[in-house]
Length: 427
Ligand SMILES: Cc1ncc(COP(=O)(O)O)c(C=O)c1O
Ligand SMILES: N[C@@H](CCCC[NH3+])C(=O)O
Image (cartoon, rainbow, N blue to C red):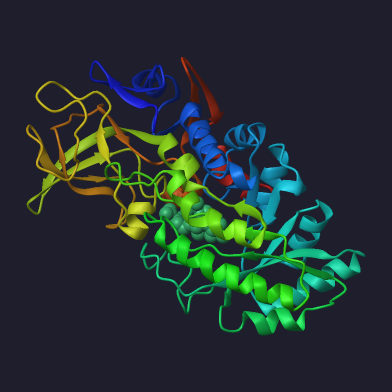
């Protein structure tokens, strides 16, 4: 479900016409719907309610403080993967009792920071990390609460760059060797192995990998307990897919059906780390057409958003729906299927101003002819859009706007040229 709808051929975010936002804040601009954000958070919380889970919003997806505050105010915890993300989580009202610390390469300083702030669970991904964390905790007179992250060697079939649970990736401990690792850690004075963590990849459009992963988790948890570890948490990570092309995403209840029986069997507290599922369909990237250009038998639509704003198409060949903010008569107000032939359209590559041939937001799309100044919406851009943006080509990072019903508010101002050089001028 999202709250981006066309009314009289004008895209609205909740009750706000998107052109009003583009006029006021300029383009490119990320526009988020708070109703969609909260709807998705609530749908996860409700689907898994019987396990009383800790839903830890994965802050890497979109770390904007206003979005994170909304998450914290509505009962979400945070999944963080760096000192910077922990800082954002705490600044947004998060508390250690609901913060899980992930990541293959935590520094000693990050571990200390996490322990000082009472992080309830550290996902640990290697034996060296385990003992480094144990030593840091011991030096502070503490025991670090640990979930061993297991790589279950399940192919969730996402994309070569986003599969995190197949043999040979850098993530997690190999499932074959994890019991040896846990056996050696029994009785360590700085470590309490209290959980098992599994994050399968992202985005996942089937519940089957979760069912298979949870079954492997159950077997391991039983073994950990036999070794003497007091396992309290089963952390099934994030990865729930969203609508990018059509309505292809599963509801949270489908994932709940796959995961909850395992949680009941081992009697653990469930931890989830959803990111994309909460914020992905809650954001669009709005840009303005600069030029049309025909070359090499192709039609290029050059607009003012680029790979530095949304790198997913460049990095993963990801598909995002693209459509005019105010489509003129003669084309559908909003197509059912963006990949089918659409009357009144011509094939176009939607590209940005960055000096890279790989700078595109969409290729070979059926779009109506557009002219300079027209507005374009790139849908499902709320997750890993702004979060992965950069200043490449010394482009200023976009503004972000949060909509609630008929109101809109700037939640990140557009950067300025002074921002671009600020860290260099200090030197
Ligand atoms: C450990 C971990 N947890 C949670 C997430 C969030 O994933 P998603 O945004 O697909 O829910 C990721 C990213 O894939 C991750 O690596
Ligand atoms: N950043 C990715 C997925 C990787 C998620 C982080 N483990 C995306 O944009 O889809």
